Length: 46
Image (tube, rainbow, N blue to C red; front, side, top):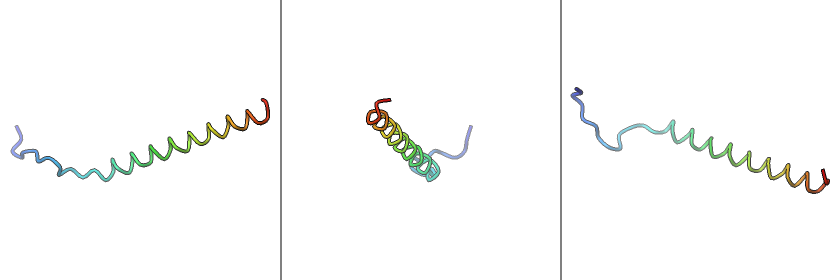
């Protein structure tokens, strides 16, 4: 099969870390937007 043996912890995961950070940021902004919309609707009795 492969002549190279897998060594744990050698993979470059900077792209995965950046993607995860953006995913979490998007989730937070979405949460803030939904909370803001609910507060707006509650204040103006829509």
